[in-house]
Length: 443
Ligand code: GLC
Image 1 (cartoon, rainbow, N blue to C red):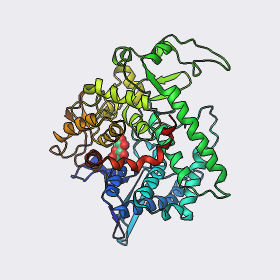
Image 2 (cartoon, rainbow, N blue to C red):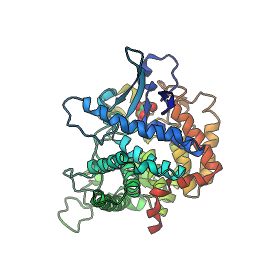
Image 3 (cartoon, rainbow, N blue to C red):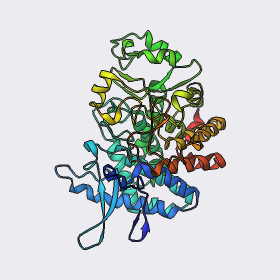
Image 4 (cartoon, protein in one colour):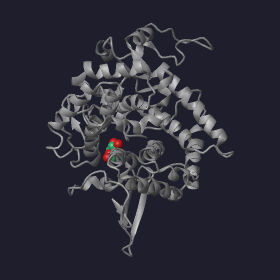
């Protein structure tokens, strides 16, 4: 996508005349991430810098959304370039005010900060981060996300559909993907902000929150057989200090499928956690980002990769990789999704396979010394993805059908695939993320 003759991003899908694909002409912030990493790996940092600047400039359009107090830290989910009546190029951002279901893109501001940090590391251009407007934006994002939210946990509370799963899927509350991104954003912002009197306190707060968040995720989101045994015999209704089952999770809420499915030598981070609520589903991107950003301990990261190894058919199958496992069905599907026909069992967000996840899978596998699994996943993708013209998603338990309503020539499917190959060929590319995993050394 170009604006004023300059490349500023990539469209979501290269259109093929399908009417329903209207917003697939947009550049989505989250979709651009794998493209950005490919551009950086190829030494083409200019487009990434243009993108980072463009997204920042578009914040001013947020003021147009009526009835909302102006919140300049919020960044758009996507933007597009069109022509106005005079034939002049115009850019229009979507802050969720146009999106299907009117969902709020909380992940956009997280990805923007994380990408800015990666850009600075990869290109050595630290000047961009030091520009006053960028420093102001970083402070604004921290102030917004660290603000008192009537909660007692270090995790961030968000509405439904505020990240890659941008539909009702029971993902309101404290979804793992947002927590992983929140952590990545906090440690990136701490690194990018200059320690001035204006920023001093917020940097200290962000640093403290990142530590608390990481400990909390390790302690409460982690699930392995040992943990499942504990939960199975949990005491409930515990009050005050010294309680083990702090969130009052009822053992009765353990779903039947998990008991036989979870291998003894593996584990993962659960999908969501709140008072009396543990969502036991496996959400791939949240887990993989937790490994990449160093939120999980070494032992946990190995456990997640072993889960992939032992449950390969379920979590990888014919197209890496399953977005969420397992699918919700029947009445649960009706209540959870609002009877969403796009999210029927084993399709789209509800148990579909998404090729874009390849890059995150490969990065996590390489980081944990599981190059064998990274290669296996790429082999699987090699056997169908380019030939099928890079579909957006696949359907079926094992992901062997091209998604019923999937777009072809989906840019992040292609970018994720290229990036996966690049990381396997040169695992030094993982250093792009090292700003956000330094804490791992403390394990
Ligand atoms: C779908 C996905 C979302 C993605 C968008 C554009 O809405 O759920 O994550 O950003 O398509 O590809």
